[in-house]
Length: 128
Image (cartoon, rainbow, N blue to C red; front, side, top):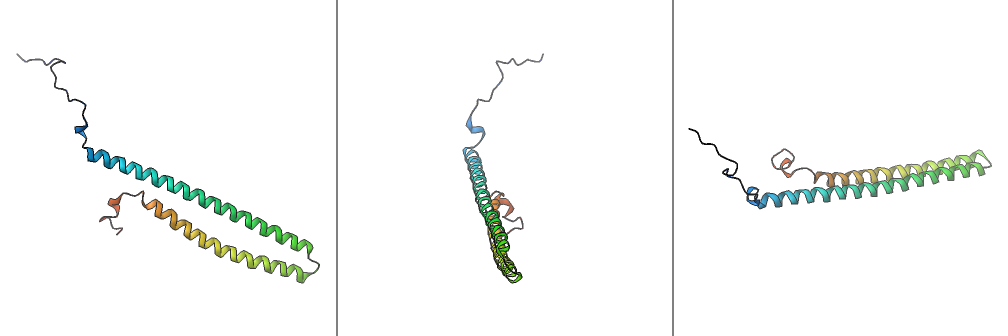
């Protein structure tokens, strides 16, 4: 006759941290902390970039306002042309600055974002 094992006779695995080695837990905690820190850094970089681009938009609006004032005050076509030339010159300078800032921002963002990728992608994954 087959014996039945009652609930009280079952061998239960006691809840123990031995099921998951401590090094795995520590590695997991470290990864989560790295992820959170990188996310925080990315957010801070995005906020910084946002502030810089907002200031840039304000300076462009100021430049346009100055142009409008100079055109309103112009008494001749040469005065108006001078105002447009000054505006165009400054506008090209600002575009060059924008390109430098954009490249620097993308680089900062990419440096922070690559830390989110698992290291295994860079070890033998073709990225080295």
